[in-house]
Amino acid sequence: MLNRIVEGITLSRISHAGLLATTMIAIGSFGAGALPANDPTRVIPIIGLLRHGKAGLHVALSFYYLGLILLVITWLVLGRLLLTGSVHGSTRNDLDRSSPQLRRMVIRWMLPLLVGMPLASMDLYSYAAQAQIAKHGLDPYKITPADLPPLNLGKFLDNVAGNWVDTPSPYGPIWVAVSRWVAAITGDHALVSVMLLRLLPFAAVLAIAYLIPSLARQFGGRGDLALWLAVANPLVLVHGVGGGHNDAVMIALMLAGLAVVLRVGATWRHLVIGAALMTLAAGVKLPGVIGLAFIVPIYLSRRPNARLKDWLRSCAIVLAVSIPIFALASLVAGVGLGWTRQVTSAVRVINFMSLPTMVAVVYRLIIRAAHAGTYVDSTVRTFRTIGTIISGLVLIVLWLRAIRGPAIRLFALALTVVVVLSPAVQPWYFTWALTIVAMFLLDPRQLSFVAAGSVALTLLTTPMGSPLDVGPFIPAVLVAGLASRALLGPVVTRARGVSDRVEPA
Image (cartoon, rainbow, N blue to C red):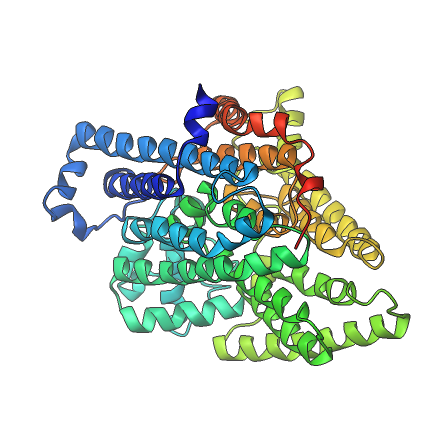
């Protein structure tokens, strides 16, 4: 019966359901989102009711979670219909032609989230506070939000999450320069600054939506499935758009770099432009350096007869492009290289998505150490340092394998390795590799697994921005797995060979 109901759903109904879902999430954000300490929206009629005591909070949470449930179901149903070819027919060309329509639909889903309060993270407020530091000519790699009150900017400090109050900025000079310009425009209006900063990741997600279908076809994937997995994904909508994380800006710049070097007839001039875009990505956030490294094997993957001198020349071009751009960006931003030292083993965030942190916590539980799982001590720092070293060694191996292997897949694996071995991991970090994987993933079994993981990661953070404790962690994973199995399971059973039957155009 469920099969008949799902397969009778039209794309129009999916579009309306997704829009309703994100609208409900946006409404809930005004009472249960990551709210600023001094929020002018609390006096707005109707919206203000969501701030009245526990009753208002419960109503807001109901809107958020009912909307999130509807969004997850809608997304999974859409994925099922795309996999079975039930939307526009069973031919590959019909499915590819659906990409522009899917893009328009997903953009409509984003719009309510753009006008709601920040979701599932307080990071936007950290961005705004760090922007004020840069605006006043101070070095955000040395000065922290805790230093803002002497500048009469305590309202920016009030909204920064406790873990990051006395932490310097971990972001690159490109992001520092851009956020400083935003601060110059918005002045000392904290909420306005936050909302304007969120436009940058929103624009980045739009860019991803336009870039990824054609990139997917170049790697033997499907444009519609790439849009579904990398853009319509609840993890991307809630964290990338609702949370406004600058990871989306980094990812968009990396995709732009790939699009340039993979053009038909690309020459070393295209490699120069691609390397520049990858450098800008790294100038937003440090993991962009991985894209800068892998752009060479990806560029040369279209040249099976590439010789050693081609590799040496390509690497030299990338270095010759990236170093001056980094230097110029640092000069414009008025900062040095302090950002590269900020993501350290001493970061105070503890969650179980970071493999070294999880191993350290388990070890401390075994030896019955005090405050195991809540305190970062020398043991946790040691395990994290070891994880960072292992991550670096694995990256070198993956890059060397990319010389003669599937470069794009190894690039996705490299991003995944960096995430799971990082000292601290947030759910939206997995969107780095997710976007790359979306370009070539076709197997329904693998798609079902990635979909379940995406749903689980979306559920692991409350709308206020606090992570779930380890207790709800397992139920969240089980719920995600059951939902994915219920809606995508029949596709896995009936269409195990879809990746073989649907060949790239």
